[in-house]
Length: 219
Image (cartoon, rainbow, N blue to C red; front, side):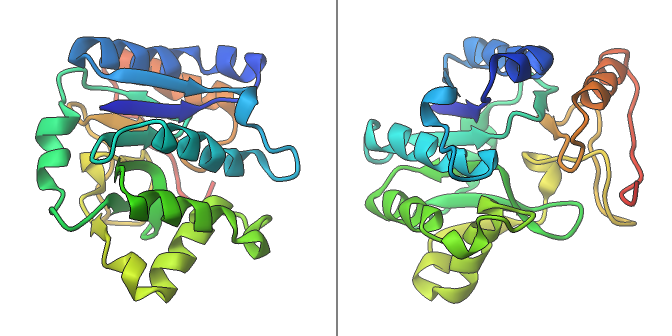
């Protein structure tokens, strides 16, 4: 099991040190391999989020078929070190599926935290995601390309498993009314849509103090 995170720029990595350290600590507890992607994978011709794809492809191409990869965005903080990806996520993935995603608390398919089974399809799928250059400047970047492919190609959709239980591995602190939000004991919290790193760290501090932070989705 490998846990992947892309974080480009020394200052960016330093500013999110608590989030990154939480992943390193988590992997040490479970004997998983933490792989931190850096400037080596930066495609300067595109917005930075797209660089997750060459990073992921590099790892997939250098991993065994059938190996599981958990890819997690840099704005994610692990909040339960005892949660086991293999026991609680891998065990739910159907044999015929190679990608496990969530519908987030805002009602969208989100690739900020996903489980991937390395396979010929997986490597080809992510290569094709990267080829969706018409979406380079879409506000959801590569996530929009993922959605496009699974909505337009049945063969891709057939390989994807999607759960509405976003708290399982993609919990937010904000969302639409009535949608499930992060709670103590959840595996992780994803600060999607929060672009101020200082604010992310403020929320992390709140969590470490035993509080349950919340953010208005329309802020």
